[in-house]
Amino acid sequence: MGSTLRRASFRALGILLLLATGACSDEPGRSTPPDTVADTIAAEVSADVSAPDLVADEVTVLATPKESDRLFDDTAPTPHFDLEVQPADWEWLSHNAGLEEYVPATLTYQGQSSTDAAVRYKGAFGSLFSCLDANGELICDKLPLKVSFNEYDKAGRFLGLRKLLFHSCTRDGSCLRERLAYRLFLDAGLRAPRVVHATLSINGSAPSLYALVEYVDKEFLEDHFDEPGGNLYKERWPGILDPQYYVSGLRTNETVADISRVLAFSEALQSATEATFNEAVDPFIDRGAMATYNAVDQLINNWDGIWKLYCSGSLCNNHNYYLYEDPSDDRLVVIPWDLDNTFGQPNADLGRSWSDTSPEACAIEVLQIPGLPGDLGILAPQCDPLLRGLMLQNWEAYRAALDALLTGSNTNLESLLGRLERYRATIRPLLEADPDAPPLADWDAEVVKLRYILIQQYEEAQTLVDE
Picture 1 (cartoon, rainbow, N blue to C red):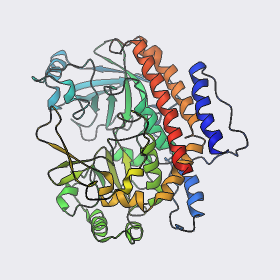
Picture 2 (cartoon, rainbow, N blue to C red):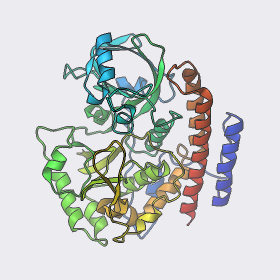
Picture 3 (cartoon, rainbow, N blue to C red):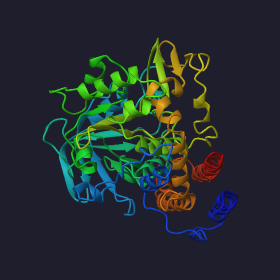
Picture 4 (tube, rainbow, N blue to C red):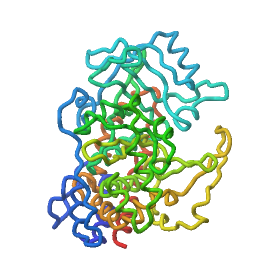
């Protein structure tokens, strides 16, 4: 299908889904697309003689059945949980949310209970501390919760899990963005947490809707990797040579703390030039997979992920991701995290501005944000050696990955809008009965806005692919 016809299809799909909930017809004249973006980029990039080594390794979520699979089944009915907390503990938690400390709890699901669980509020500036007044009192109707099954008993598990996260959609009026974004990473063949919607009753209250998010820990590694024994880091980006920086970010193997691999990667980055970048990083990261990751990240407009560098003084760091050192090939895998800020508006840039690496573009922009102590700096992503090289030295692979998303059977616009409609139809009656939900008319408007953003975003991506 030509790009002009494909753009027309984007608009037609939006109109059809505004008027009806039925499935759209298949694209005429197109053979069945590959199952994952990884398949497509491997085929397209391997045909590019200018970059024969840029074949993305195929990545798929492991199919071995796990206890948690029934929780995170994307097509199953919405799961319901009952949380019981002693009234005095719940009262204390409500007045001390900012401490992020646990209190004892019992969580029940389908007749199974964890009586030795613990619960606390969770979140960073946007989802937690922006919901507290100057005295630390709650001003939001609902906050995200973390339920731990191993806080009091290190061997404690529930459905094979150590923790469950109930996200309250504080920054997402549709309560759909996070689930759609994670699903797109998964359908592109990348490793990412699974997300479904769930209802939660607290001490017998009316059920309230949350996004149930898979926690990234040892159990996650066992569910998503053939070899789950490697180092897992939270928000530790290669390029810094301070060993303590990486040790402090370890979430597995903390006692051994062998960080030699990521340090070797950082040293390779320090000495790499524009001409030698690809050769220098290939032993440490799959550039094809990262082209797909960047394509998804840009398509969902994940402005608060790996390409947003926050600075304190001259030290800059990105956040909302994990890094896993996969023992199967000794390379790092990036795992996305906290995707509730995605799909906020169409992303027309899609990485084009990264070509500007001038001193002016790489000057730290200082921001003053109410509620945060001191000044916060922002550094453009192309000023980080790894981000810059992965995008600029692999631009054609990135464009191929975007095209694969636009045409993939599980990632094209038709599929995405169909998923949006399915989720919408599922959670609307739950929101109607949710005392903490926004007015239904406001929520309906947010869904219409999100649908428009998706259509516009795919048109923007098609424009870049056609350039």
